[in-house]
Image (cartoon, rainbow, N blue to C red):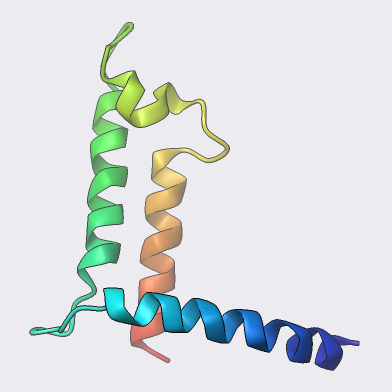
Length: 87
């Protein structure tokens, strides 16, 4: 059954890849700046969430009301990167 699922998803994944390829950028130093941006946003959200009391910046960070916290997101992204680098 897993093989059939892979066969069914292959055309969709191919179309998504073709759509995303023009958005790719050249890597001068081997870093993926998109993931660095996400990790930076997670750090910013952690800083905002640690401000005492109500803050208008909670509109940016979600006020720690999302499904996962910014710290969990940061660790998940960093873990993905470690696995990607050392595969």
